[in-house]
Image (tube, rainbow over the protein chains, first blue to last red):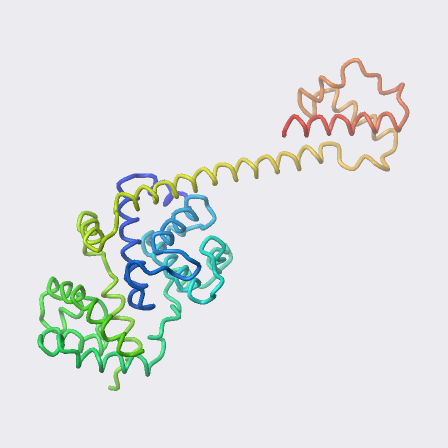
Amino acid sequence: MSDEYVEYLKNDEKRMELALRLFDYARGLLEFDHGWSPGDMLPGGTDPENIVLEVFSRVASGRRKLNTRFELEMQLKGMVRSLISALYKSANAKLETIDLPEDDAGFPGVEKALGVGSTDSPFESEEYSKRFFELLEAHPKVQKDPDLGIAIMAYVEGASGSAEVAKETSIPVERIYEYNRILKPILRDVKSKMK
Amino acid sequence: MKPDYRKAAKNLRDAIVDNSHLSAENLRKKLSDEGVDVNRFLTRADEAFRKGLQENVKRQAAQAKARAAVLKGSMFGQLVGKARSELLALYQAASMGQYGAATRARCRNKNAEEMTDGELRSWLEDIERLNKEEES
């Protein structure tokens, strides 16, 4: 029963931690997929904070049922992704009125319910993604740090997740986390060159 | 093997937005460093959650009320077209407490035998209506 997860969220400390995780996640997705920067408004005149509030509201009110067969955080992050995707799909979309197909109790697609479907990001295009990696590898800051270049190559060669990149490259995972952080402004720079 | 750049972009994106290795305290610091008023955000998140819970309680109460109304509405079933013998049987069942104490009390000091069919039907309809009003 999804009520178990609502009970879990009634714990102040656990709810606070999840709120922070979802908010950070929403900001990261918006930045990567949609070129959002802090201070920018999202379609419908909303902001990333409101996406997390909407997720909490839907879950607490029972408008969105969760499935205890899947991790809570994974499902909530899926909701964040779906709401962002829906916001960018329609210019008239309002956060509160977005009707997600997975809100329907009969929605059968587990992948979509978990938010692993399309994100309407330009990276859905192979050509765009290829050009992106070419520019990324040629970026002066990447050229300056050979290990960073190797880490990026590992992603291109199919590594998924920081732990796998660390394993493939023999670079400590803490350093890969640090690279992920360093990459954010570099990615912004690269994306601005792609316009 | 030819690289799959779409998949690579997805993997890179997932790695960059992954925050599972960060503690709550680290996340709080990271967001603060990025200019977020974390306390204000958490207060708003709490409010959204609590309002959601209240909405849930209200909705469940409304649903229970609607269910009760349906049950009350069908207490005697469709009265129009029922024969006198059927109407009298309903009265007898009600006066014996089959439809609850409140309905039984309303049957006191009533002599159904003296009523016309129309009066009996109208009286049973009144009992249903009064029960519904009490429920709402």
